[in-house]
Image 1 (cartoon, rainbow, N blue to C red):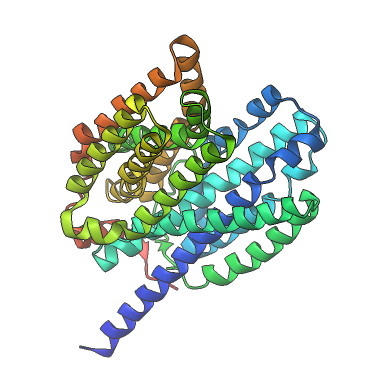
Image 2 (cartoon, rainbow, N blue to C red):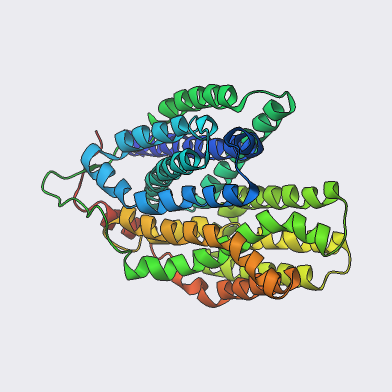
Length: 402
């Protein structure tokens, strides 16, 4: 084996660990924010309904800004773009806690979501590139690292809330630490640069058809994930009359199931393939949703939510990976899939509530079960093909790394 090949493998391993650490930092920002929402609500003086309105703005900001990530990467190179976008995201953590009212809270959450979405697209595009060059699945593990970061951030936020810390101080300290870590970790990611004569991607463009089809699978998975995360505790409390503590435990158990399944998912995908893995996941998720609907006891319902988490855990990472191989502009395709999945995450909680008002919570999770069946039907669109061929195609018009 030549020294050049050994160096290349060593560089790819370093890039893999670096982008995994970036995913962890990105998730930690989300976890840090989520645990202090009650403090932010009290500080801004908004009602529950107004808070619900404000919390729609991160997804709106992300959906608007994500198409810009490809333009930023084209102009500055992948590493510099990720470094800047991730720093904007970590520093944006300080903004929501400063908002004195509803209007400023909505504005800061719009910026918060916009920086989240752009950095999300940039790091997923780099993750797909590393996966293509390694010729093995790593995207599930990367998203597992995001979930791990979210758990770490939420644990630190829970401790800060328990100590009665001011969220403005907590988020300032967290932002400083995460910004430094992000800048350090970004040094190890691949530094792809566009060729001088390459046309820049459009600043705003409709997602390519391939991204829409792939995004539809992601939509089903994220809808089930969002419904379970936001409504599992309410379901156990209202439908099965459980204690608040046990109801809350169902949400934690679901999040842990998602994280563990994603961290272990790459080995499963490499052994059985993306299509078979998602189809099997669809069976598990549909079985879990059905178990939730018919469960007469909280333990069975919690088992159903666990199966839902296990079934949908790897779908979004595989959707991003498939989008990155779907055309000549990976960032644009990934942005399209990300926009669809963010939209699903935005509408899922309210859609579940609307169906529950019209029928019941049991009927709502009947809808979740039906969407889980869509994973079995549509899994074929995630067929990966030859990653090495895809990677070579993705590098057309890209200058060597600096």
